[in-house]
Length: 317
Image (cartoon, rainbow, N blue to C red; front, side, top):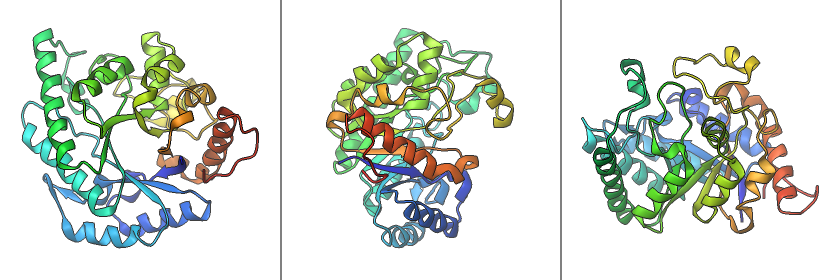
């Protein structure tokens, strides 16, 4: 049975376990049933290795709540990294170990980037990747994920569709859901599936002229996890960081509460909810934390409508 929850924002907690506990208390008070834990926000992985005292402390906190948990891998993780590939593999391995230690069912992984976001400022635009190099990098990522999926068969590695950036796209194959699907099929492991991010989907659809509902439908058999947040769909340059400057113009990956932007959630979620039994995580920016309950209520109503259940709903599905 699917459950509605929210992510713990890594910037918000910034390694402070007291803040982690306070946010989980807030989630419990509003009736959420799930929480997504950022391993990087907890300082639980250090230079590619799991820090076991931190894991022990986090596990004791998590066990005191009735939530179902997922884990988000560090955002800069890139299995197409050319300089320190083995370190990136070690970071994902440590993240999967963290998930196994804390009882999390799913690890969200940002797929490989031909050009990492951190390198945008030093680049002159979209990466120029030839067919042979592109194939090599895709196979490099696939082989690493095949090995890790076999090491941790109890954890689902859910590969997230990516957002586009003006001036640097296509920096990642997963901006296009169809290409993400091909890579998941190439990996061919039962526990390697997809995280559908509704905000990223909306932006990519507008940027590339795609139908977001059709794209979600193409992925429906592979979706194990879902990030649900709102925006108006207009991609930005990587240098545009200030949310208060973007919002008036409907720009950027806003991560707003459900219902604040322009995404047709009922149509998108309706493509896969019929047999979906994973987590719907309202992935809000920290600036919207106080609206978590509103976002969850709006999402619960949309889920009920998408599943043909009318207005009878609750936050905990």
